[in-house]
Image (cartoon, rainbow, N blue to C red; front, side):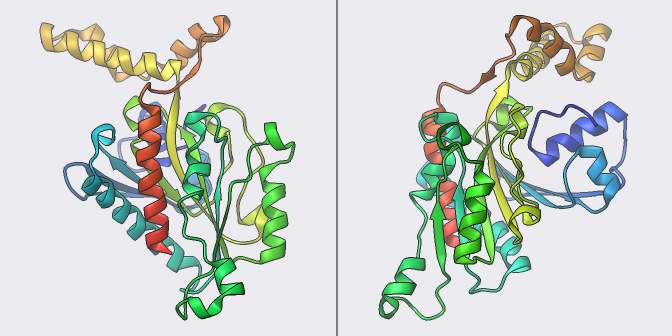
Length: 311
């Protein structure tokens, strides 16, 4: 298996195809793209068999990537539009796993004190929770309202408890029908930082994208379906250098019109070579943009509104 160092299924598929020189679609993987408008695009990757699993190192299931351009300067109507797209796609996944009244537990993973990792806990503060009202004040709730509960369980470094252990205890006690997990991801592309949402119905392995793998949160470990909502907030220095090199080569090509060496260099994925050069000096850092605070706030609005709309 390749060292993908990205949580996004669409990126893993592209990396595999480039490395293996695949021209068509990979056996066991189906995909389709949809352009909502000039700023929002949706790509679906479906892994259908074991060959697809082995190729990109992701379990069988549905992976939906929503790309939102210009999120740094997004206005209220653009944030609303992105949240509506997320809500529509999430609703389809929920409807395929539970009924309209099935109880849902929403979980915000991450450390609220570390900005690139704070998205999950921040989203939890915006979720419309109803379980306590239905249980204790049912007269104030419309009939047929879905039970929704939410929690931000913290991280192993501050609790000393694996997140899946906390969630197992909650699931065993309140018996939700499905869990929605929100987490920060790692990407292999600068432009995807806090401008991409990945939905999947296969669960999540926290920390996998940054080499700090924690216990899996999925139907295998919790006994109920787990829908993951992930947003890339960091990249490795090697990714930064590789993307910068591509941009540099593109600039030289625009000026020089043609250069065989630069063409060959740009066609290759130089990530591994760059990473090998950086690691001995401990320079392969995990980095995030300087605007991460405002990007997280915009993503928080998109994700929380999308979840509330779907529930």
